[in-house]
Image 1 (cartoon, rainbow, N blue to C red):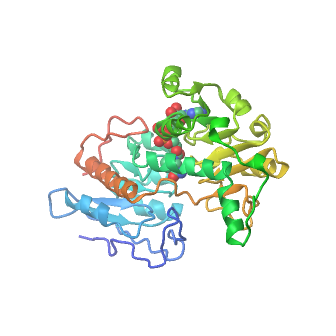
Image 2: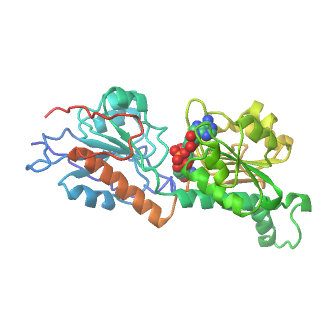
Image 3: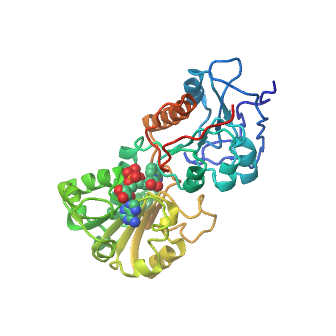
Length: 373
Ligand SMILES: NC(=O)c1ccc[n+]([C@@H]2O[C@H](COP(=O)([O-])OP(=O)(O)OC[C@H]3O[C@@H](n4cnc5c(N)ncnc54)[C@H](O)[C@@H]3O)[C@@H](O)[C@H]2O)c1
């Protein structure tokens, strides 16, 4: 029996891009070393493999503990490189992925995978249709960080409306005065805030905004007007939201119909002096159009946890602005959220090995394909 020579990624250079560090992501150490495994069973002498394409954690001890309950093992490929992904997933019994592009080619290479599990809520790095065509369910972890992202959204919004970052910098640098004219300091009670997307996170943001006493508008084609009203907000169309809001915050997924929804044309319909907040996905906002609107003053400020591309390239014109708050895609983080994310992802992968029901399938697969014995 041939078994993988190296079961775990131990690269010392690797830190956490998702949690604010750098990271080799398979580029520097290139140590993907997954040999074809021999046939495995859950109960026999051979073992099933759960391949983690990439991850931003210091180890995979949580996942290994969950997999060990059924005698399965975790193999960390730690790559986002398409050719290496094809090789890494070929003999996987289940795949867990974080940011790696699990595209149609990678999915076509999966000879045995019973599920693809995303470490997170958004599944835009996985080709859902290709997985569905092959009968492979794709699962996310839908509820691990709702309060984290909603709190982070309010932190961004309040920092912008109260000039927290430039004011702090001025005092650190020895100053002691207002950093900007009083008109730049605003209160949420006096503003109209537009929330795009009324899912788990959008609803949590609405609850927080309503508590501050301002007017809150919501655009979500799938949300019932009554549910929005019950939260103390008003249902509107996206054009109405953009035209009326002092602040627009995005909480919908990256889909063909949402990509680039904030672009030169839609920014022009927004109120002069409006604020743009994005903690959803970077590709919802055209970065060049946003830079242009900030340069012209049409948009007064922005707060972005996500960007197109990530990481933001050095010298990108979005950088270095007092009125732009940036973060490296970390709004979901807390110790409890990360623990829950990793445990749930591993449990979903293990459930797929056992043929147990998967509670968070996002690509509509109900009948799991038969895999070779
Ligand atoms: N920054 C981070 O760390 C982080 C963490 C978690 C999630 N996210 C992002 O946040 C997004 C939302 O998360 P969630 O838990 O609320 O998801 P969710 O699935 O509960 O809700 C998404 C909502 O968006 C709505 N929607 C779809 N298309 C829309 C459109 N064109 N206009 C307006 N609304 C639309 C849906 O109807 C749904 O109500 C995720 O898709 C993910 O991309 C980011």
